[in-house]
Image (cartoon, rainbow, N blue to C red; front, side, top):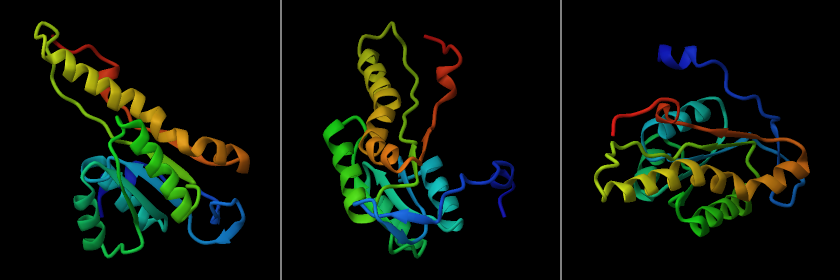
Length: 173
């Protein structure tokens, strides 16, 4: 057992009565939609939510890695969607595909993110800064967008944004 996970506290409680894409009640476990699910925090979140009985909708640029991980976990019912959160059409399509195939998630976790060192004195690093902003800020809003109307209509749902400490403290450069 991982002590770090024990300290993290309980997972968000979700009503075990999920809803289909059309909004009608269906008796099935709750659903979590996680971006950045191919490694790191996203993969750890997927494992933790699965252990808690959630169905998984996993999103990453590296779809093959997510599929391989899910299969290795024996999680053959996970929905896997390929999308880069910087590609607004792709993340919107992934969200719509999730709703169509698995229903409206109970929890949406915008976890995809990048953290790289940049030096504002170096011109090429401005593109790195742009990519970081598009992923870590715009990507969060884009991840939530496909689900907002449906969650509001059913009057429940949890949105989680994972952020970097780089947003709270200055970095050299």
